[in-house]
Image 1 (cartoon, rainbow, N blue to C red):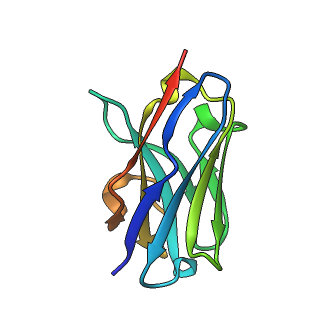
Image 2: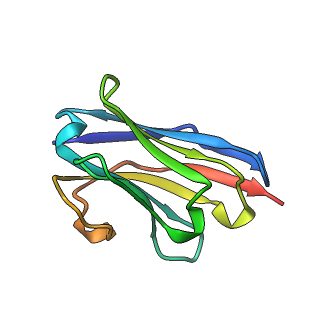
Length: 122
């Protein structure tokens, strides 16, 4: 069983930066594909970025060039560095994991954190 805890959310101005963190306990994340999803009020949960167990990364088109997902094996954590933030990035950001998976859909992820709020003011 993997336990995930997000942190680092907060309020930032448009154009600013923020890094959210996902600390995992239990098995090492090197055997897991991890991802960040986000959900804004009244909207469906949306894929943002994934760090495959193989080390490859993929991003939602609208965040490419602005967001970077990374993994720190020593800390068994996954991070999402968010730069050039826009008001439309405002959402609760969730960390998720699946064992050696390759899916970018939320339903395929078995483990979830409780989320961290990111608010971007205009």
